[in-house]
Length: 155
Image 1 (cartoon, helix red, strand yellow):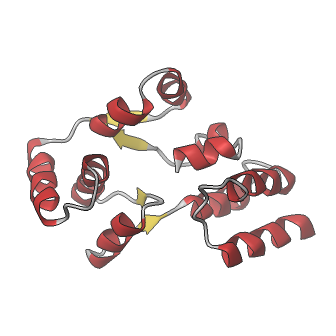
Image 2 (image 1 turned 90 degrees about the horizontal axis):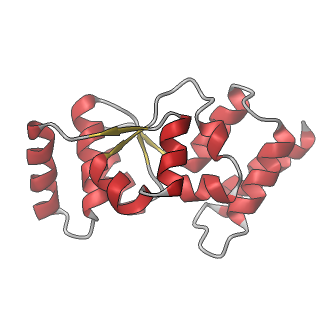
């Protein structure tokens, strides 16, 4: 999700939304450490260690769901135990979260929040979503992307 927002030049806008964004320390140190991580922390990203109960939950999930990465499992355990919204682009993680009644969203939901809170102009959203969706590794649903792009142009 962070990479998608970076591709769409919307990363800084994320921290203008009226939410706090948190990643588990394992995810931060394995995937975000360095200049990008420093930038994210400066913008407001919080890095959290899992409490013992959360770590135990992550261990149980890891044994049950071997297809999920440790980073995804830690993010899930943190969100589940603290009753937070989980933001992910991973389909398997999303399905598990939904199956356990956790509120889960992705980058298109964030685009909707950018629009709802007027964090960026619709022109900027259009350019950003175009940048994200045109990347070869994009896995966003084409119909939902097209619908938003058309809406952004109309406004």
